[in-house]
Image (tube, rainbow, N blue to C red):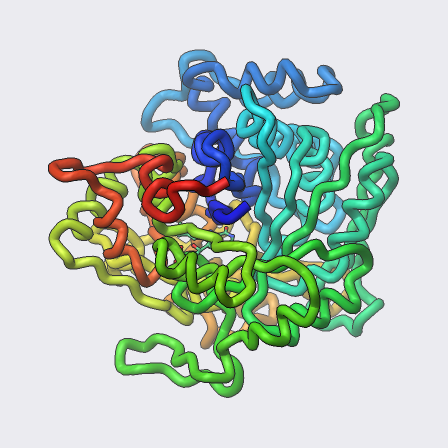
Length: 471
Ligand SMILES: Cc1cc2nc3c(=O)[nH]c(=O)nc-3n(C[C@H](O)[C@H](O)[C@H](O)COP(=O)(O)O)c2cc1C
């Protein structure tokens, strides 16, 4: 497997893109981020094409699939100005209904990506979005996912839960909680048998690839994870999406972007010494970069931006067209924004009018937190677990003990990324959530996939250009 199509949330690497890629030989990876909300919205849009229904019909516990259908499906789709009904925000003690929605939604995405071929399919998660991990991974395994890829954190406790879900055993996951000492926080728990109430045959344990930006982290994962780590994706700060922060004190360049230096370069000798396969990511979508990666001992490359811009991706068509016009005019502008994402990780943002890259659009958005994936868990004065996000109303964030200086410039990327995938929330019949687009530094380079006279390209064009014999 020389090429991996990187997981891209929210719903940019959806089942269509991952299926197209896997059918062609490389590894197609669906994004596992926010799939509960995505399934709920696709159903409220009337399930165009009937794909959700088809996948639900294959869910091994029909009772749970029907419940999701009954709760969210709107025949013919909701009226254009109507708001989406939003499933509850995840909490430390989630309801059985929400857990079922998560299991079913992850099953649906992987099932559809695997439909009609026998090649492997992967799923990508961000470690920071912890509450959905257990039901999401279980749902993806029920659908036969072959790889779980995880970045944006230190996923030490993921490999062990993959082992437990093979036999549908209860698994737990420690919820990182500000204000608690290690071992003192909440442990999330999920019992598949309690939810399904049926005996299902054993599942296949997917391979686990950790996404890292430091050889020290790779070593820690290889030595201390609670189960087998099967390989690494080595992601450079040129990659689209979230980037690891630079090591040491944060310094900004004249554009206000974090400055990366020699300490941020992964030592591939140390990585090779671990004896596990690795793939290089970040501006790696060219035959030259693939050759260099192979020469450096990598198994191949992981590519995101080139696939995000191809016809099959879940990026909204109008946004794709605007970006492609910039690509063709040579005017792309990608900024590594240290503040935009509530995670605190630098986040690559494409400068595109009408989106949250425009400070006026960002300032005009009423601050509201109602999806809550990136909320931080913290211990309240009464000992209970609370949740806060620097993109929520500033006074609310401060009343929860948050640092007020942390709130300016923060975008609600949960709502914005749903809009980017064509499922924007509409509030009070008029305020439509604006999009935010993330792309890698080398967005401009996707021009090389365009055939003469064309203004779009496919996943097959990307693969043919990078590695004609890729498999
Ligand atoms: C639109 C977009 C969304 C992304 N979302 C995620 C994500 O949700 N999780 C993740 O681990 N990586 C994410 N990435 C990173 C990709 O998986 C991949 O590693 C990266 O894009 C490779 O670098 P490139 O963009 O230069 O090809 C995203 C990248 C893009 C372009």
